[in-house]
Image (cartoon, rainbow, N blue to C red; front, side):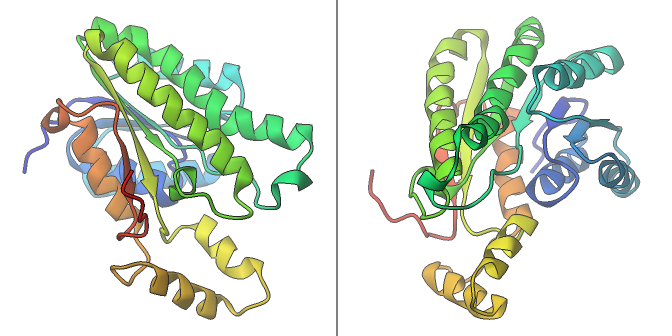
Length: 259
C-alpha cells in the first residue's frame, strides 16, 4: 500500500535506536525526508548514515537534548532552514528512571516532566505554524502501556505520559480546524534497550523475566520496534487523515480494560 509519504518532511525524536529508529527508517522507506534527533551525537550520526544508505532518503541528524526549550527550537529551526517546512512530528523521548513513586525527589520529577511532557508541548508549539501554513499535518506521541495500565516502579512515566494523553486529546480538538491531527500510541512490551533494563533489574535471570512477560501477552511474544513503526506510518500518512484524538495500545492484547 502506498502511504503517500513521498516528499513529506518528518521530525522523529529518540531516533538513534529502538522505536524511534524503526519509525524514522520506515518513514524514509516510504519516501519521506527525515530529521532525526537524539542526545548522543555519534550513535545518531551512525543511524542517519544507515537509514540513508538503506532507503535512499534524505536524512538530517540533529543532536539535541529535548529536555530544554532551546534544543526544541534548534531542531525545528534546522528543519525549517534545510527543508520547506514540517508535515509530521513524532514525539519520542525515552523514559525516566524506574523506582517507587515516593522515592523520587522534586528534582527527579522536574526532569521527568521536562523530558516527557514539556518536550512534547515545546515541539508541538514549534511545528504548528509550519503545519498550518502547509494546510495541515500530523503529530504522533509515543508513550507506553503503563500510561493507561499503571505498573509498579513506573510512576514517573505513568504520571507524565498520562498528561501527554490528556494534552493530545485537547489539542486534537483545538487543532482540528487547521487540519492538524494528533494521536498517541501506547506500546506494550517492546524489545528495546529500555526493556532489556527491566529484564536485568531484579534478582531473577533475564531469560526467566522475559519468559514471564511473554506469558502475560495473549499473542505470546514480545513486540518489535517495527510493530510500532508500522502503525505510526499509517497514522501520520494521508491514509490516516480521518484519525485524530486517539490513544491506541500496540501490545499483543496485554491491555484488558474495556474502557
